Image (cartoon, rainbow, N blue to C red):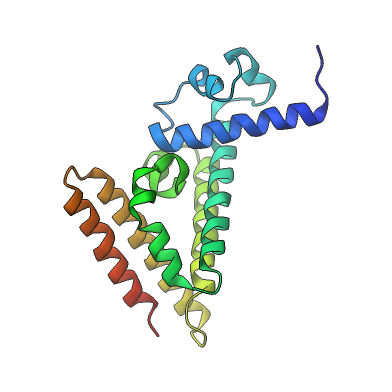
Length: 190
């Protein structure tokens, strides 16, 4: 049976969304195609009707997941600025739900070992996240200062989120989030 283009596109989107969640939760290497396709409500055999390889899916799901993160941070910032970005990113909810969180924090170390075009997707999307932060830093700063501070804030938040996820102690984990939030606020001050 042949499906129309709209059905095929909807199915592809389900696969990308399922991959985005599973890769962030279990890692790319730890995710098999059969399990991923089951998450999307499909059989393993249908994968190659949508993607040439797992790496193609990795690139598309990274792009999709980070576009979601960018949109969420932009929405949260709204009129509240960089403080809302910091609070949202360094929250226990974000820490506890990597499958719905920032793919940069969940997968950067693993993607660093992938081919250049896959790394390039993550690098490009990291710059887009930096741009959202930079857009909410104080007026009057030079573009260079805004970029440098945004890069530092994103790096600080990402590292703190990763370290907080390692901790067995809830107090230590929350400490990483709180201390990083305080440092990020200082970086955002005029």
